[in-house]
Amino acid sequence: MSKRSMRHPGGRACGVLFIALSLFACITPAGLLAQPASLLEALQSLNESLELAVYLSKASSLALNITDARVNLSELSSLLSDESVETSIPRLVDDVKTYLSLEQLTPTLELNLASALDSATEYIAWAQDVLGVPQDAGWELLRDVSRHAYAYLSAALGGDELGFELAGVAQMIAWLPNSVVHVSTGDDLQRAIEQVLSGGTVILTSGTYVLDSGIAIAKSVRLIGEPSIDVPVQLLGPGGNPVISVGSLSIDRPIDVSIANVIISGGGHGISVSSDYRSSNVRLTLSNVEVADCGEAGVFIFHGNVVLDTCSIRRNGTYGVQITSDAVVQILDSVVSDNGTAELADLPYRSIAGIHATGGAKLVVQASAIEHNAGSGIHVERNVDLVLSDTRLSDNGRDGLSVWDDVTLEIVHSQFLSNDQMGIRLGDGSCDPADAGSAAHTFEGTVVGQCNTIPDSGTPLGNGMGSICPTGRYAFLLQSNP
Image 1: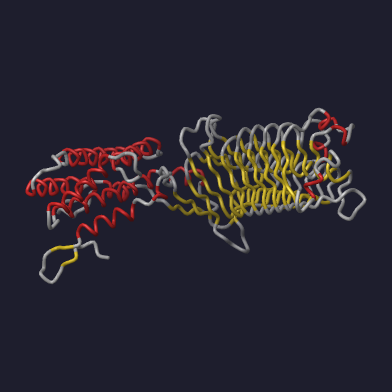
Image 2 (image 1 turned 30 degrees about the vertical axis):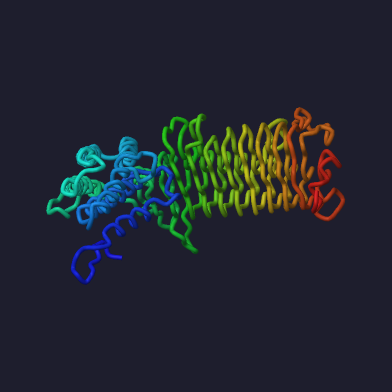
């Protein structure tokens, strides 16, 4: 529908109220209550609300009767004052100020954006002032108020609708840096990440990126490799430090990072995720990412919320995925294999594993393969919640699943096959008194589950030392109806 008012055969404007309220309904569904994730999103949300405010003020000035004018002005007053709703203009102005203070911008651009925002804020305040008229104000006064509000809000929005080129919110969006940056193997990847707009995308052309130092990501960004059958995108890091570090212990704002279609090799950890211990304000999504041949853990997570989707974590020096300190992790449709060394697996208390989780972490492993790791397939301890479903744990050097301490387990539709020791070991030294690691721990948690395949030793694909330990107590994990 056109934004222009509809006209009936007599030529008078009609339908203005319908247009304005329909626009309001389009912008305020219940699903838009989340805080913006970047300066660009905050400005876009403010721009949309200001556009709506301009239409409401114009609709009131063109209304056919005083009742319609009052309805439109009431909606406009709410938009300019009610900070409890997502479309509240004062609330969105505060969001923009917050993200502007956090964004990494050149001094000149930061000054221009701050000046434009100050001007827009003043125009918005003038519009709020003129709307402070009595509910029973007369027709002419309401029209005059509507026209003044329209002029002030148009100035805050910016553009040339009034015949002026005003530097308002719309112009601020145009001034922002590129939201998409393309890089090739000869370019400075760290610089590209720093220069792209928060919430933007860095696209890597195919080839091998030999990094002089690790990449640090401390803002919302997408790092995407261009799909290529013949030449993949590979990031080869120097020894010692993580190839990619996401977040930091001092990060003071939420960031949302996505990495896709790349191979990460070398370095210490392949990817290191860290967040302030008081809040998990770092979110990382890995899609179609391979992390291989790193000196330490493939993926190390200290706090934060991490999703591995269709990933391959292979041949890393210690752990495939190492999770600590209240992190929330989902491993979906992925492979974690051939991680760790036999020497590390033989060390007591080291709990080397394909996936290791501790310290109150929440872990979901679904539709994945955890196999051929030097230690256990998965080891969990110290208040971890683990949900394991439709996953195969096979051919691991110790147990398929090893559990210590107070842990909550849900295990369904999973297979524990051909592991060198137990299919599932629940922290009981009676399973293997010679195992100093397990003997030092007891299992004090809860277990639910059903429909798992855990063959005993001496059977096809059986586990070397048995199915489940303690024997018998958790046999319900094998049953269809526990």
